[in-house]
Image (cartoon, rainbow, N blue to C red; front, top):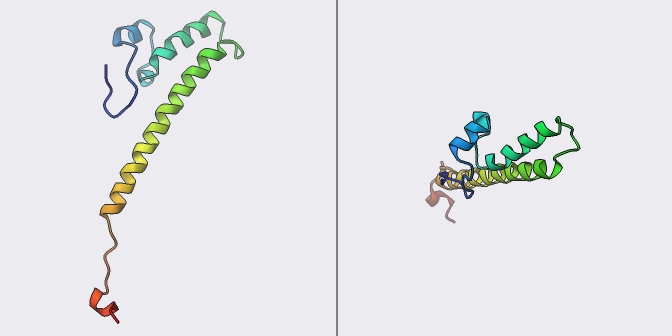
Length: 97
């Protein structure tokens, strides 16, 4: 499934996310990494030094999504800044020497 405005594809299906009880706010392009992370966490009783590989891969995926959104917003702001040119109150003829 393709997500509009993102370079990453949805790998986990809606049914897989429901079955794994992934909370709705976390059902993004990184949900396919969250499912095994949550299973590992439950199996290891949420010990912080366990499941490091799964945690790192999930956090990296989320970081990449945030950076992608930030770059898109920066481009939008730059485009808007180009459109909003400052209006000069002094006519060009007055500046001519």
